[in-house]
Image 1 (cartoon, rainbow, N blue to C red):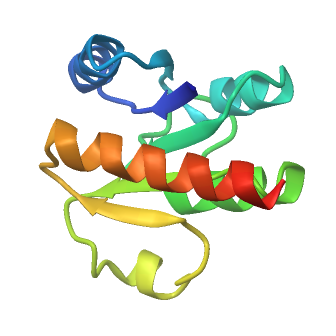
Image 2 (tube, rainbow, N blue to C red; image 1 turned 180 degrees about the vertical axis):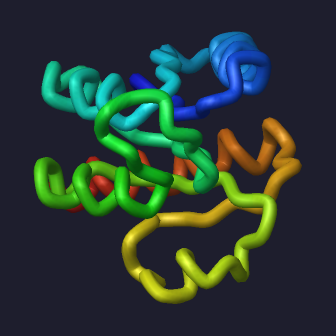
Length: 127
């Protein structure tokens, strides 16, 4: 399974990449929405893990919600998981079906991997 991690903070991005690779997943980690969309357009992504709080690092100027909306327009069936400090954030509650799952930070590796397996399996069964 190819996981796309979208996280603006370089240390968190590197840690997520290392931990997911250690857990046996293939991972591409990017810092912003533009890089995420390029990776998705390349057609090698099976599931997306994005932070809700993306900082503006490129011309796309998007947070996790805006990125998920752009991804849904391109690839409506691609599973998108969101990491959020506050799962009750107004941006998330305003779009209750945008993400396949919202995971509270901090999140254990067990929880992350279970969410990946659940949503990747559901997508492959629907295909």
